[in-house]
Amino acid sequence: MRYLLFAFVIIALVSSACSSAGDTVGEDGVIAPAIAGSETYLLGQSVYNAQCASCHGVNGDGQFPDAPLEPDITGRYGAPPHDESGHTWHHDDDLLMRIIREGGMGDPVNFYVMPALGLVLSDAEIEAVVAYIKTMWTSEQQTAQREGTLAVRAQEP
Image (cartoon, rainbow, N blue to C red; front, side, top):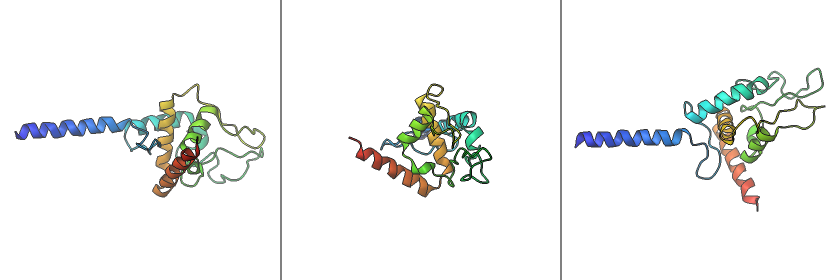
């Protein structure tokens, strides 16, 4: 009987770990911050490092971490930070997904243009990147961004 109970507990733990490791979207439809070491975290980190870090920084500190709000010698602003010092958390999930998919800042005179990655990355990879970026924020920023996402969606017809 003891072995049966032990086996049941092990199966439950393994099933729980497997089912949550790849989940990026919570019950409310908002992309959850990735759990360190999970499949989502590792995928998001890998894609971020390959596609985003060269401009946004490996640690999410932006293209010009010493002066993120100052133009460079060309007069253009660099890629913004995604960590807690930036403003990425002010945007809802759908906008973040769209910016990654379609590219950002259509003003090449004042900004370095972010490429559209929708033909390069799958929706699952884009969600994993968003979930990974959310790990760079404070818990207060994560909560505010989640509430902002829900508020934007509540206004949609």
